Amino acid sequence: DAGVIQSPRHEVTEMGQEVTLRCKPISGHNSLFWYRQTMMRGLELLIYFNNNVPIDDSGMPEDRFSAKMPNASFSTLKIQPSEPRDSAVYFCASIIGGVNGYTFGSGTRLTVV
Amino acid sequence: DQQVKQNSPSLSVQEGRISILNCDYTNSMFDYFLWYKKYPAEGPTFLISISSIKDKNEDGRFTVFLNKSAKHLSLHIVPSQPGDSAVYFCAAHLTSGTYKYIFGTGTRLKVLA
Image 1 (cartoon, each protein chain N blue to C red):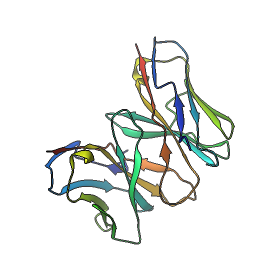
Image 2: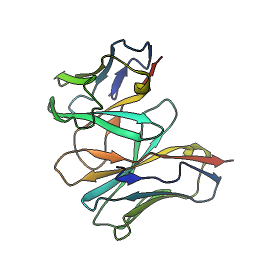
Image 3: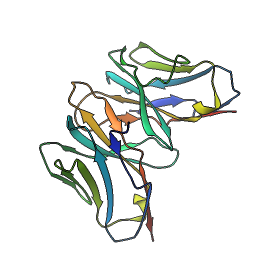
């Protein structure tokens, strides 16, 4: 089991550009989560999917952020246009159930200059 | 509105001594709690959890205590080892039928050799 796979690991982009972050959950996990980590707010939930359907996107900061899960093995988080305040580490996580929590990916460190 | 708070951003402990990491929450509807550990450049990994019907859960060197009346939980690491140096996140689950967790801002633990 390769775990949750995120790409790219690092992304540096200029303000105003479109950024797409990618995630492959663990096979068989039916819930997927996108989190953002910042010093001030810790780990914030942006959006989560259950069986590929968005369930709660109340954490998405604004319309510049969008997320999709076209199938059970792939999800994207897109920021368009990007701004310097979007700079953070973005994590994807998946879970099949139980009380042992999510499995997180290694994250994408996004820097918007 | 931070429903899960970790008020100590950092903690330093001597090797072999006890590390105590604290977490406070505001929502009485949380039904279980988790601790995650995060090393640099890696995603958070699950460490230990506790149901709201219990007041203690132990796993090797790690023990989590829950005080529901005070809305407080703590993670004890005994004895502390240099490899325990990491950022520790407290997370809480709402009784909602979903796997949505709310995380605190994290505490950076440094165990000094």
